[in-house]
Length: 247
Image (cartoon, rainbow, N blue to C red):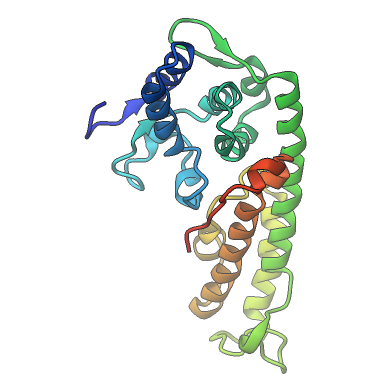
């Protein structure tokens, strides 16, 4: 396999299929290893899923092992079922949830013209999981922007961060406005593993101190979604596997 240039997803998928069909364990293992650089249990996916299409990832991930499109997640689910590699499924299902409905239903084309489809069972799992992820994202946003500060940073006088550098109530009001805007934003809830820094730092006017407090809370929420990702898709067996977060 090439050592420096990323390979395309279809080549990695072909390795898995050929290795499985002809019992070439080393080929199947290498293909699954490459898929595991995307559909992983060990890396927190905030960086990966900020820009889902790896052809646009050069600024954030200069050396991806494999080039892929989000709809390749459909093929990843198919291959996970074929090989019994269940650790691929949580992030593959998650990426499937980011697809448009027509992409999800019409399948992922292979280079040979065939299409990979989710089975009816896996399509149902994906649809149910998408609802769970949307609920999780809304709940996370409410906890970040609507809930009162917790811990020693809280001011007993203002009910806000005691070290806020703005006049009393200014950042707290911005927080309320932010929650209203992001909940009304089209597509909100589709990618709860995305980073929240943009919502806190770039789109709204917080002082630096409050922004850092809110980012800390937001990152905690993203980690929480990641840690429960197998559960959203009823993958109990995967939940029992080693499922890690990078701090």
